Structures are given as structure tokens and as C-alpha cells.
Length: 350
Ligand SMILES: [Fe+2]
Image (cartoon, rainbow, N blue to C red; front, side):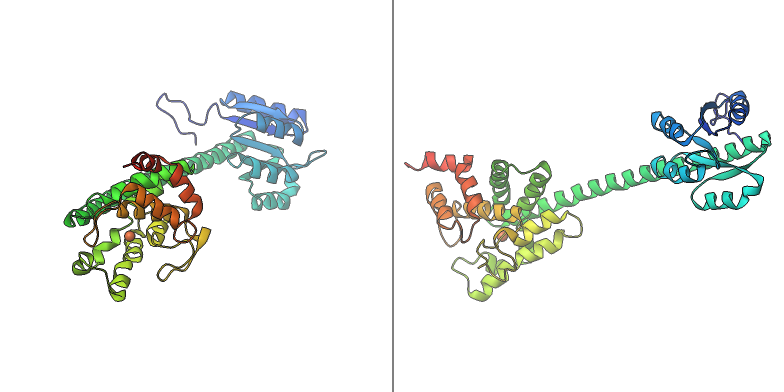
């Protein structure tokens, strides 16, 4: 049954129906009847022409003759189903071809009608197939809508989570008079290096969050050790260095893998000599190799409880000295070309 729209017209009217049959009389019979019923009826007398009509614009339904000279309807059916999955297909078959019709249903046809046609039965089959097609399209649209909604909510949730994590890092840093603003400065330097290296927008976003949150795991480091004025014992050092793994574990359920990798590996040494390191060289995620330099540079140029800040020029020299051992030499070269290093060169005479 046709569903009336707000204007009292059927929503199925004006749908394009393609009749594929080698017999001109059959095509004409169906065209006249379907046009009277408000359908936009097109015709093709063989499989090639049918495909050409299908390619020229959306066809809601095909009435497809099973037996045609050249490519038969049975051969054309899978091509229509794979190339035009939103098009419904009704097979037209002789009464003694019922087994073939059943075979066609198994291959994806929506229905079959028997020759000679009872035109009212044909109309009913077309309406039924179009209704089914409409429901299928509406369901898919609704699923897409729901998926977009869920995706949108995930984005909002991630934003809230990252914002909360950033606030946590700021709070941690604010408790320590030596590290206030460290992560923000590391992010600025890391992004300048990412820019120099031509990172994609997606990688830059991961780098921004990875550098802002690289030390979030310090929430698990004992304050007495964190603020110890002298150098750390090997055990204390090992305890402090767990922050990379702890931080990655904290953010892992919500953020994308690249952010997690940056946090997990930001203390890895390029030559593989870092504490409990499992990867080395270019196997260390690129973002982590960038943050390693940004982190070290900001740490060296800031006062710490156990030493005063180095000058920018001295810190640049340290970065250069450890190219190829602690740091990726390619990123050190990018660092030396970046504005951070320009600032350092301007500061060198001082
Ligand atoms: Fe760290």
C-alpha cells in the first residue's frame, strides 16, 4: 500500500522504475500501467542498455526479465545488486520458471512476478518492494544518525577528559615551585619542532596533547622523592621513572593511541639505553622522540631543586652533544633550525 505524504500523494509516486525486457509489447504494457500510477517509467531491451540507464541516475526498482537474448536477467541480477545495492529488483519469469525465480530470490532479488502478467499483482509487488526499500534506506539513515551522535558524544567526552587531565597536570606543577608551566612550555617547543618536521594536522594534535600530558603519571610519584633537593638513589630514580608508564595507563582508555605512545615513551633514549626501554631508534614513536628533546630543553633551562637553570646556549649545546645517543639526530637538526634554537643563537653572545 502506498503511504500518503502531507499533500495526500504517495511517497512512492515519481519513483523511477526501469523495465528490462526484450519484448516491446511487455515493456509498453508495463510503461502505460506504471505511468498511470504515477511512476516515472524507463525502458531497456537488453542488459547493456539496462546498465547504462542504471549508471545515468538513481533507479528505485528494476523489473527484470529472466530470459533475454545475450546477457540474461539471471546474469544481470548480481551485477545490479553489487553495483547498485539500493535498487530493488523484481524478476519477471514465465510460470514454468518458478525454480529459476526462487534461485533469483536466493541471489538477492526482492520478489518475482509471473508472465502473463496480472497487472494489479505486478503493481502490488512493486509497491511492496519499494516499501521494503524505503524502510531499508530509512533504517540506514537512522543508523548513520545514531553513529554520528555517538561519535559526537565521544569527541565531547574526550575533550572533557583531556581538559580534566590538563587541569590535573597544572595542579601538580603548581604544587612544585620549580615545575610551574613546564608542560605548556614543552608543548610549545614540541609543536615548533613538529611544524619544522612537517607533521600532519592529526599528528600535531596528538603531539599537543601528548606533550601537555607527558608527566600526568607523576600523580603516582611520592612527593618526598619528587621534591628531593639532592640527587636520587637508583631506587628513587626507578620510582620516578614509572611515571611514563603510569601516565600512559591513566589516559589509555579514552585518548587515541598516538597520545598514549608519546606519554609511554617520552623518556626513551634514541640508542636504547633508557631505563627498562623496549624499543630504540626510529621504532620509538616520533611524537615521543620530539617530546624527549622539548622536555629536556625546558628542564635544562629551568631552575630545579638540585641545580640552577642553564643558559639557553648551554642547553642547546647539551642537546647537540646527545644527538644520536639520547636524542634522534634528525629531530636535533630540526631543533637547531627551529625558532627555539634561533632564540638560543641570539642569546649566545650573552
Ligand atoms: Fe617525564
